[in-house]
Image 1 (cartoon, helix red, strand yellow):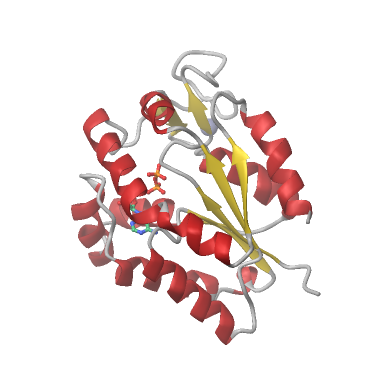
Image 2 (spheres, helix red, strand yellow):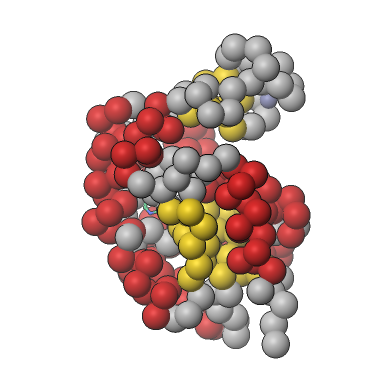
Amino acid sequence: MSTQHNVILLGGPGAGKGTQAERIVADLRLPHISTGEMLRAAVAKGTRMGLEAQKYMGSGALVPDEVVIGVVRERLAEPDAADGFLLDGFPRTIPQAEQLDAMLAEAGRAVTHVVLIDVPADELVQRIAGRRSCAGCGKLYNVTFDPPKADGVCDVCGRELVQRADDNEDTVRNRIAVYEDQTAPLIGYYTERGVLESALGGGKLPDEVYARVQQILAD
Ligand code: ADP
Ligand code: ZN
């Protein structure tokens, strides 16, 4: 039996994947592979791939599968992902999930845990509106649910807190619609494979959700 943690975090935009991911990777010492962060880094650098991705991200649409799959394939080939990983924001479509299964199978591996962070859609908009991150260290906050000690300033490093370009209301509604249309079918895909478990996230604090996530990952 394998003791690897090849983990996928699934959930709508604003479900709290990033917050749970920080805790999981710290406890299980897994590399945190966030396609959203990798794509934003490519946009910030102005690489060719970043410029291509930006066209979709600005409106809350998905970046084409072949672009994202290429990014993940390269990242999973790095040595730190050989004994386990946490994928955050990938896969987001059935073709991405099929490609991931194929990639892992080539190395005799498989997805071991899919953790669904289940939050009602009406709560997602409200959460994203309050979301901020530190411009210095990247720590996540929510002005309503998890505010910093001083307004607009990071508790850890003192830098200013910023809002993501795609966290405005129109884009958020589109991202939620895209999630329901293209990503939610993965719930059935992974349920059939017997690897999916849910953590209810609606109206819960990050620590409460994490207690359930720890249970899921202990099996
Ligand atoms: P959130 O989960 O809050 O919507 P992410 O940071 O995961 O945000 O993703 C931000 C944006 O990056 C998405 O709206 C999409 O345009 C793009 N993106 C990230 N991951 C993927 C993916 N696996 N497939 C397609 N597009 C992606
Ligand atoms: Zn900081």
